[in-house]
Amino acid sequence: MNFKQRMILHNLNLDYNTHMVNYEKQTDRTLNMIMNKFVEKYRDIFNTYNFILEYQDNIFGVLTYYILKNIQGVYPFNLKVYGKIKKTKHLFYNKKDIITKWRAKHKKNTIFIDCFNPLYYVDFSEKDFNDLSKSISIIDRFTPEQLNHLCCFFNLWDKNNKELLVPLNGMVISTMNEIFNKMSIGNTLPKIFYDKYCNPIPDIKVYELNGDESDFSEYDKILKEEKDYILFYKCPKEKEQFIIDNLNFFINSRNAAVKGYNLNVSEEKINRIKEQREEYIGENIYS
Image (cartoon, rainbow, N blue to C red; front, top):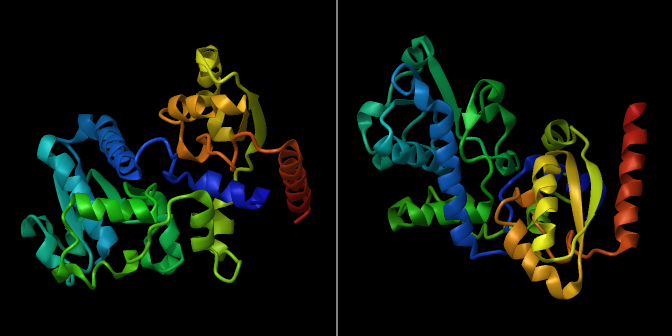
């Protein structure tokens, strides 16, 4: 995988498979983290703001709605939904949640939530979404395989939902290589990925680790700076599992230690990726 591909995957920041635990358990942990962060961010305004879901009449809309309803079951807040609701209307908990677009646009003190997942720019055009800068997504980090797991969590795998689940059928991809191949059409990415995920340009850094508890102070540094770097790790081969078990629990999946991807990768490969980065920067300075 070359530098540009790694950069796009880094900036997408999906919850790639860290190979640390069963991927279904990782999905469950990530779902809980996303719900907890939502509560932490908005709890103080739950009583004074309206949360409005800009609904898509598909599985991504249903999953977003179900996650929000799970949060609402513990922390009450005013949730309303607008958009085309036909194929999925039978899956709503409460029909009173549905309002017209006119009412949604005229409510004051609103937080808009969309059903956006970046991988589905491949299957849906950009016009299917409104201005994403004015809304948030709570499913934008999930990989296709994780979306399948979420359907299991919410008991959506049912013969009555067969048509609804078509976009996820067979989508059991979770690794960075698999996901990049999914995004590519004829080895070419849709323009939206270049427009949205080729900036910022992360630097490259290599950490020399011992593979034991003496590395924990280095882990603190890694966690603080991983947003700005594509990271590689070197350690004694017999210590690889220690790093996978201990570092990957805390770090974003884009920089999790993965054998063959960024853990004990050859010096030649790392240098080649560094050269590609410099070439990319040089090409874009004058473009």
